[in-house]
Length: 293
Image (tube, rainbow, N blue to C red):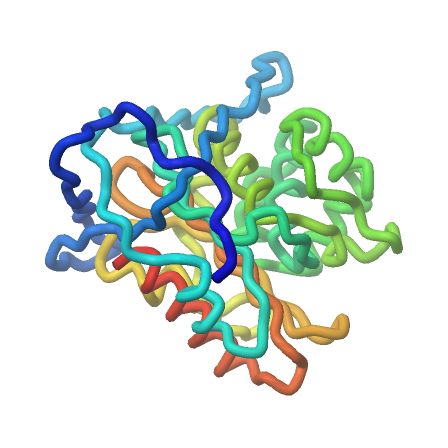
């Protein structure tokens, strides 16, 4: 069994361990469900704010919910690895109520970003007063043409290095070919930090776009695998990523789940190219379902 990173919450509720129940809907109501967690947790401080660099769009800082009881351990690294048989994953569930990761599996393993780098492209475009509606379209429909235009207009690889420095990202780096934004390298731990910044300091335009993610991307790909398919009636906001073949098939799901955007969920995966998108998408959904309980 592979070790999970982090340490269990020390000093919190040494008595009975309760289950956290997150109820809500992304359009429908559902029976409340607990969120499953691994035994180890890792504290991740919030990225620093830079008020002078915040775009002029209306900000949407989502305050963390009030503290709650610990959650029962229910998933480990070996469980998750089995769900992506033949592939690799990096997964983090960050509980904003506790200020710590409740699941951290291969969190520092590097992956090709595919469309997840659009989060950084969007932040740079908005920081430089770019067109809000088109930035939202780039995110919600995962529009590659808009991403390529904004990548060129707002700094190219320096977009990545800017946010690496600002958010103190440790495993993110620009693509080797400066024109291929989708080849940016990322880790699950770094993507969590990006979401922390978005939730705390970024304009409401970003979260509005992620809450309005369309079922089909601009290229026709179904982007409701992972978090949307596994959320079970909980509210969600997502940015997805997919690509092939470099040489692997990449499928990423990332976003926030639950009332008050309580959980940041990031699952990054790579599969051999012979594993089709349908199969890979189902495996990613199975991983998220295991994480959410």
